[in-house]
Length: 307
Image 1 (cartoon, rainbow, N blue to C red):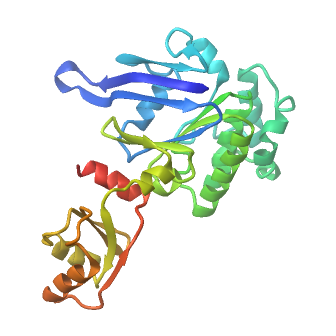
Image 2 (cartoon, rainbow, N blue to C red; image 1 turned 90 degrees about the vertical axis):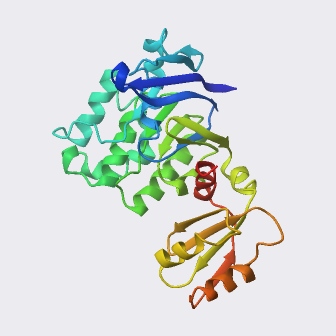
Image 3 (cartoon, rainbow, N blue to C red; image 1 turned 135 degrees about the horizontal axis):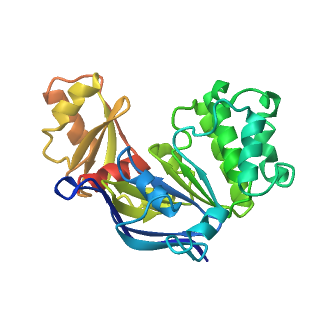
């Protein structure tokens, strides 16, 4: 059963002579109760897609339905069943934690008490600070408050636009644990994030760049279907290794990846650790470490960009 169906959405900004295509013929669907990730860097088009699906922005072309409602014709009905957590903290900074929550409940003609069970596991962590102004909360606490406000009317679908940007690693981990609990309640979630490591926490992901979707798949299937040989290489300074390997004839792609350089090639017999090591030694590099590795989502993304 599909909760969200998106068909050929496009959106441009600016005047005719200077139009920028932000979303380019995007199509995808999201199953009920699924965590669907929209994965891509800043400027890839994620927020524009969210704004259209949450009925804030009209598309130039294309259509979409949310729980069977047309996003243009039935926008009033859609707004009743959506929860939206924007990328930037957008709650009232001069209101307290409790006042913000009460306000958002009143917008949907409900009360905190009526829906407390839904947010209890999240809100209990910020309840000791319920009288503190929202603007004085830490990043992780702001995140929990924003999620509580997005859930207070019991939405069927939840949109989260880069919800973990700017928060510490512990808060990021806690946040995704909260999303897993919400999934168990049957809430459909679409999460936009630039963090490739968060892609593995989704049921399915869409990789997006320059407004176009590059691939849609489960994280596991995407990594397992990586068609090229992949090695991580380390031999002193990353920048020097990268420069040298750019001239390695058997390479397909080469790019920095943390303290290592990742090197790919077509799956053929001429590409192996021994050939790589010999090449690096000829160029004067020492303390060489070469390991065959499995592809991450980031490796898959880079491969798609370099096609």
